[in-house]
Image (cartoon, rainbow, N blue to C red; front, side, top):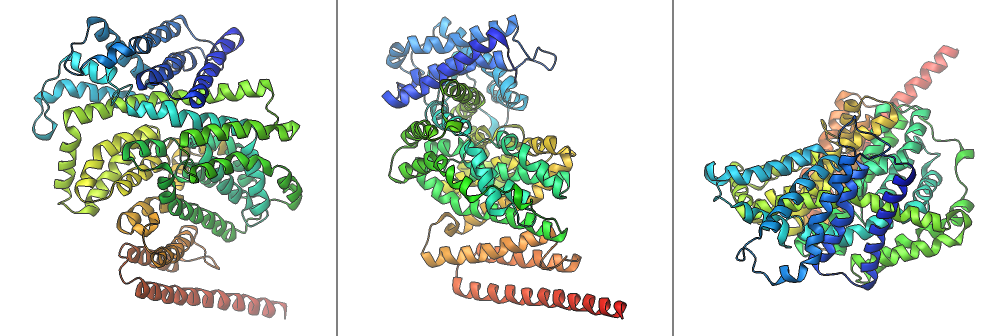
Length: 638
């Protein structure tokens, strides 16, 4: 992203402030008609992508060029037409009334400008993917079997991508970006401006800073808390990692491990309620399930994800005798209590969601609350300069999400209008032999491959459009299917070879990016297990009797602890290869039991006895070795 100076900075900054103010205005007065709301949303954000993101690596980084200005102007024309002609477009019969030559020109222009904006502001891989789906429309009549589709006229392609509002560039996905997501992005900018991220770091330092490997625990806790609000893994790494990664390296963690811990903790924020990034809002829109129910279903999985990561970094610290930060560097409880008011917007947000407010209004009131509580102290006071800065940051952070959602809307439109989604579903069902587990493996691979090159939200949208029908055809309920795909679209960000968030952590740590990526993959292993468990055991989604949920918590908690022990190679002592394998096997047995929740009492009893026996064996060896070392020391002294 360019760092503009002078009048260019003021012009673009003012434009972004206007974009944020528009979102707040519609939150206060009511959302406009779909085509108008989404048109204005992209009218603000699509042109500025050309001004802030350079075309190539050789393009100027401190100013935009004449070509950038031309593209920005051209990209603003198509949404302006939709806004002005909204009433006339509402009266036309879709796919019946002809598309005028002017509308055809604007539609083609909009598609081309969007593809270029995606290439610049999101990732080139997504532009290539969306472009490939557009090309598919022309080659589909020549393809065999499920990939065949009837020839489609250019006017029909333009209509479904540009003029209608159920899919395409201005479809439902962009509608989510123009309402829920935009408000939460602005809320995140307000919270960042009022230094909530710093407060989370202070709390984490106070709670776990002096424990073994304290800086790593600070990274886990602060990144999880801040990431649940910010919803962008890479941004979270830079927000908290610039502080935590040097601290981890200073006490003895390997650079690649320090970068991986921050990357995994930051990525987990996208599955941690109450915000869960933009994907949760899109999921609510696609499934018709309330946002608060989605958050509740995701809660246990996120807790076990962070619990495993926290135990792993602790065991690694114990294995290598790494200390925490000095007590004099830990913030005092007085300082924590003084700043606790910064949590009020987040608490208010959760309260309003639980009380039944829509996420849209809950976010709006949380923004007002953040503005109000900022005046409690001079250091956090939202002065006019800070207010404009927060609004500009909110507008800037909306660019990539808005453009990515519009591009994902194009793919969804093509998949649904050609029947490609149903065809792929039949292929998945055929290749898996109609069995659920092989189908899950195929869909997991699809989600990860898409997520490696795309932000998690469009990756989730495209993957669920392709793989969702297959899961539903096999009897999987809607929420489980969507959460399954959502998990792997997120975990792709720490899955080599293209693991963007891990690369961000490596850049700060000064470590090898690929080694950091594989380290992150190992630390995030529970995230790859949790989706398979809730596909077979709904207790993980808080569905079932209290006894079933409690049994799952006990068993999965034990499995996660053993898994963390195996990854770190420590359980009261350093583990050799055999004992490490034994720990992994025991964890696997517990997980295997979890996917068969029948006879819960018997399973719980067997697993608890097995775990206690393993504990006793390892404890015996630890005590025996300690006694031997003590005896050897006495002999040497004598």
